[in-house]
View 1 (cartoon, rainbow over the protein chains, first blue to last red):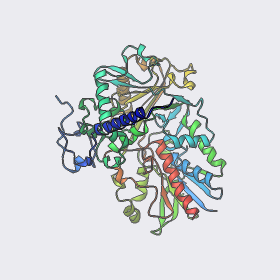
View 2: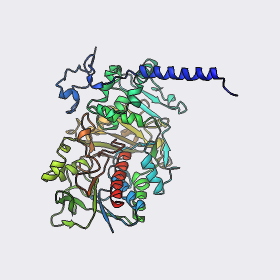
View 3: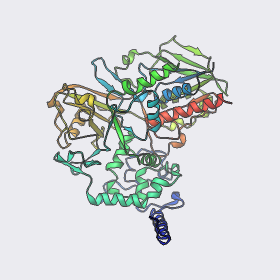
View 4: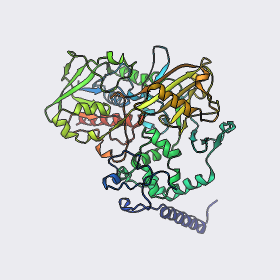
Amino acid sequence: MRIEDKSRRQFFLNLFIGSAGLFFMSGRRTDQSTIKLKTGHSVNCNNCSARFCRYYHTGNKECKPYSIP
Amino acid sequence: MPKVLIFGSGLAGLSAGIHLLEARKDIAVTIYEMGHYPGGKAKSYRNEKGFNIDHGFHAFFAFYANFRNLLKRAGVKEKGLFVSSRNISYFYEEDSGRVHQVSSPFVNTGDVDGVSFGYPVKESLKIADFGARNYFDIYVYPKIEKWDDICYTAWAIERGFDKNLVEKRWFRFSRDAYFNWPNEVSAYITLKSIRNLRNPKFFYINGNYGENLINPLVNFFKKMGGELIFRKKLVRIEHDGEQITAAIIADPDPSPHDCGKKQWDGNIPVLTGTDVRISDFDYIILTLPIDNFKELVSGDETLEKMYPDVKNLRTVVTMSYQMWTKERVLPEEYWGGINGLNEPMGTVIDYKNIVEVYKNNYEYGSVLEWVGQETGFEDKSDDEIKEIIINGFLKIPGAKDPRKAGIIYDLLKRSRGSHQRFILTEPGINKFRPHVSTPMKNLFLAGDWIRNHVDLPTMEGAVKAGMEASEKILKHFSK
């Protein structure tokens, strides 16, 4: 059975709106490297021995310990 | 006839050799292997008592397309050999003492008291919400390599993931799978893994890796005219600044480690006076493990200038503990590996429940394998580590004490040798990993730690790197 033109337009419009919604919901940012962390970063930084992590290089080792109240 | 020398008979070396001979009949390919068995970190062998000894537990993922294709061409049939995992995994959680079964509601582990199907709804919704909000970054964004210098934990928390869930399930499992626990894995490596695991299927191999996977590859390689020479170690390479002019090989000294039966740390020594200089070749592919490669580079000014950063790559000592018991110690309902156990061994599996070779062998009640890493336990004796492992095991719902069930045989292996250690995929190290091509026009590199299109330290990564090295050489021949 042939889909009527109006239904086909509605279908593609819904598809477009849904895709756009998914895109904006994704929280994508253009430059991830400038994100400021809200409350400390990895909870495991104090136990982590990574030497080339970006936070280690910036000297930012203000990690909260794992047992966050 | 053009000659290619390959050093290392792990999956990278075998893949490279096979690929070359499949493409051209007019090439001579020789693989030199330092040890007694082919297969590298994927090898397994039968010891003097007849027990199958693995380098470690391997899950064979369905996304290993290149590896599967290679095995198919070598005549390996998946039917009967590849046992489906039914995508099932189990995660033990210390705080509740419960095990959560993930996937396949048709498997009846729920009958075991203390095992739940799935996770608490609230947590599942948080994870689903995180996945939906960050779908683009997780699955689509093409430049994920720029997130190599941040760990996946911090990456996820930045994007709103609940901090209270970061030491559980996928977070814990991915760090165990790359032998990094309790340290962190690069977000780039973790995201690459997540993307590959959009096909979540994986398999267990119905038997010994050496007999069922590696030997067919070796036989295929030899059938096409390839030569495999054991017990020859690459000691150094000579060059004129532009290309390799000679490879010096020598016989390894097996006495300190009793031909692999005893623990050996560091590099395997060579017997004095056994050096042989080989200069009759056109190309070399090195598939050496990192620490062996670092040894080759150090002390040579030109090679050190070519690879100044390789010293920043660290390796980890993986461990495996295998045990055969008289009576069953895990309910047969457990179909798969149980993850999230206490250190040092985060995962255990009872092959008796899954693999036909053991299922039908009434000598054994259970055939257990634990895997993990030595990090933090280097000073503990084998007996101390075994006790820690068993005490952790007893917390699993339904588990029984193997010591009371009767241990027929057990073996704890620490892969401390330079040729056995695994790359530590910590944040920020991707830029230090060498590529397949080198500044020397007749020298190529391959291995699970060498940059390639798979780029994950896995069997598939090793196979792909071997293919890429051989393709570079084939392009030279066609010029």
